[in-house]
Length: 244
Image 1 (cartoon, helix red, strand yellow):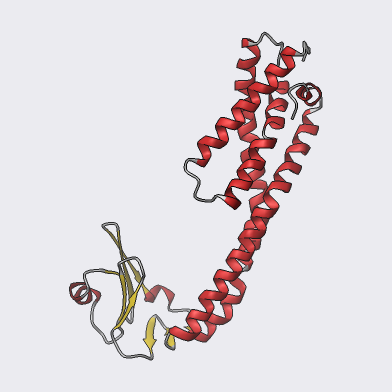
Image 2 (spheres, rainbow, N blue to C red):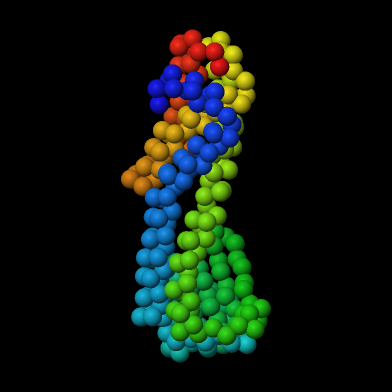
């Protein structure tokens, strides 16, 4: 990432810059995608175990929920709220009065959700064509981990386009820096400089997410370093008396 090295990159074709960016995104994103896969796999396996051990047998068929357990079931959500399950025939309004901290109330034909002052009701009648049991849920939980594979498949092109847009916007900063440092710089060259300037900040961003996930204001840090590298690239080319 020597400042003078930007000259060679700026004189490459735009296709070369796009391929470089694709390779950069691939190399940096692979560890992140693998982490997502293993994290989701572990989370799915843990949730499946909790369902097998802690959930009672239930059956949702014809839009009616049946639960094989004493009613009401009171479940602590761990965030100060409760989930109440009662298929004895009481309405959720009665249960809400009895359990004011309930975030979810599940009756034999409805789910009532209350969050941040807003309420929503899901009617099981809309699912009358589905038959669902505890055993079926545990069985399909094994396939939920493939959601992470879909994230990987669709995540790479999304991330690539996002970084492409970042480089395109930063090229305007590169042109402004070129004007200040009196460099002859067109937009395509400024874009290629911006792509090259992404290297260290993007790698640092990947490491930060893996090693310091609770970093305050990570986006501000990333864009600050990125723009610094853009200016360094243009200034390095100017100081080396390189005609772009």
